[in-house]
Image (cartoon, helix red, strand yellow):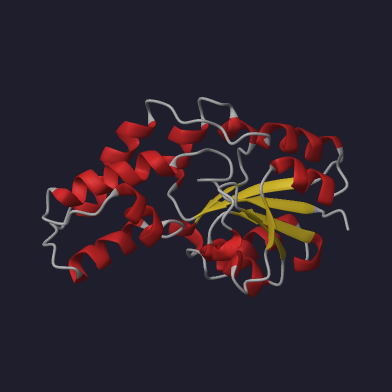
Length: 214
């Protein structure tokens, strides 16, 4: 069934910010005595929140200052301002949705300020203006609250909407909200989809085909 609304995650679905963010977090935590490689940072925290990183780092023995979360965001923002690649095929998918009159929105656990930095150079921030939702404002995934807010704002039922995410937090949020979900696993690792019910895809073209947009 062709949906009325498609909701995109941001990092790893619209733009490839995760390698940059993983490296910055790894470098930052090393200054507080935690030596965790970027790839391990990704395994531990991808799809989560910076606050969650801080909580786990503290549990592992790091003593973080009260300003740590804000300080780390500044480091991440500075790195992202240097530019990040757009996910292959996503612009074509967005244009295909527009041609069919299908609504779209973003649901990200990251703050809007971060999305503005990472999405503006490619024009994606303007393409989604007024339809950008953050877990900082509406509750982070895997809770369904943010997705339910988007559905209500757009007058769409869960059955009429589709989520595209690349991490278990998003898969689980969609499942809890009663929505279909595409699990974008371009790295070829569908194992992280588990029993979340998300449909694994490795290209944006596969999503276009599945939605009857091609």
